[in-house]
Length: 545
Image (tube, rainbow, N blue to C red):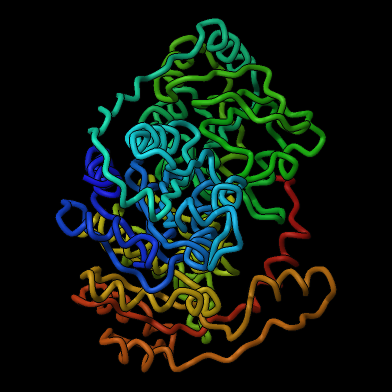
């Protein structure tokens, strides 16, 4: 047995089902070992796509997604997806081929110090230089990637080490046991909650990773406390719940800003500062905060908790609830905020304008997607509208790249989502800019049998940057580009292609596309004049009720 074969046995031992990547000269031994493995190697069209697939696989399963590249340009292509997983808390193991150790001391073809290069975008990384250390390195990689806060790790395997003979066997994976919060901390939190007049829960992605949806919903319901979620916390509490204030995180004032203006206590549950900076909702650091999470809070002058409850989130919430005696009634402003949000949301249901307003597109998308179906949002102006208007009943049914905010994630992410949940409808929601960054992976989707819908918000430019430019300078520049015929583009791959030509077309087109047995692409012209209109409206938002 050589080192590459032992590596693959270790990956099997960790429960790896898929490896996403590209073949190369320096990873030939790994590919050869995979031929007789239970692991399915999915050949992608770009290493960035492979890393995004591993990223989303990790988010949806809680188990590290695995991606593979060769050295040099293959490894540098991998980095964007690796960084995205690391900042967004998705467990991922990246494996790179490398020149032999006998060539590292001299200038060598395609050689880069990959351990140094990946260090800033991973939790931990290592190069295998001794074959007998392989099983320890692999076991540590998965343990580090999957423990709180999850993230990316990297293993570098030189080609001469990969071919060396080795004896050994995989190490038994350890169980991730629950940790429990200190009683005195939970008591401190309960006392503060009982005294607060207008508490507000801010829930983030950690509550999804901790499977705390039921506990959070029960906690909020019993204590009558409204809940706002970050972009990455969507669905922890159903959006139809009367205490749900939907999503916060826009860089502009919105209805939910009124709840933060009024609150005298924020209970942050599974919240990570990278999801929505506390300087946006607590700029003076004056709002008292209770931190409930699997890890201690990051240091930030706008986020200094009066109590930190660190341990299993569900257990922590249940124990705080048991200790709390909250008798304060819900602020009437909460009902008014929900009324205003829902009224604005519903007004676009019958809008027949064309090109279609983003609010209308997302409203109709919500109508055709079931509670368990999945939307993967790319990054751009459409992401901001999806964050604000696409509401969720269940966790992990709307995935948004937010910590790193990397364009190009939607199509590779949808492939991973369909592999994990083949029975669910999956939509990759993307702008035309993001679409063209990884559209080649539609061939991968067809080849591996993942039939999902790619919905293109087509405005012929980088709409989010145009929005920012107009807000800052009153005009835009350098953001327009041309596009191919997306319908013919899809058909050239052997996919289904559709073009929306009126507002009335959208729902029937979505329904037809979602039942195809091959991937489908929908080209939908979008009216992004709504961006500036929203900025103008939010700038004049008054919280007086």
